[in-house]
Image (cartoon, rainbow, N blue to C red; front, side):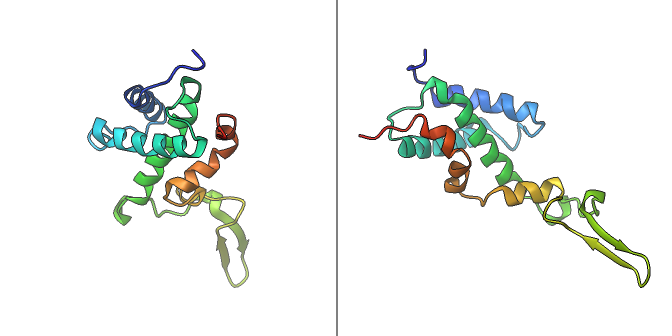
Length: 143
């Protein structure tokens, strides 16, 4: 089973399961064809990086995690400003000064989820790939 391949259709089903668990799956927005496009793009990038002709069954979770990162980040970037929660997050409070009132928001060690997602990587597949480089290196073939 370790050397068997997994199809993109099977990867789409795993991706739907993952996005559902993360409560990020919207069947109207994430149609089968849209998710298949993400999977096709990620698998091609992984195959090129690893220099392999097909995605191996053992790589399924790495590829699905890459796809879910790519989908979630794309969704977050694509939100209209009206959809974004612009309320101050108490976790973003970095300093308070009572005399002459100073309130500091933002800290490099603490940030809300949107900032974390948007700062995770840029919206390109090369950056997503780099987040999984160590895992993918185990499957990389040098010809």
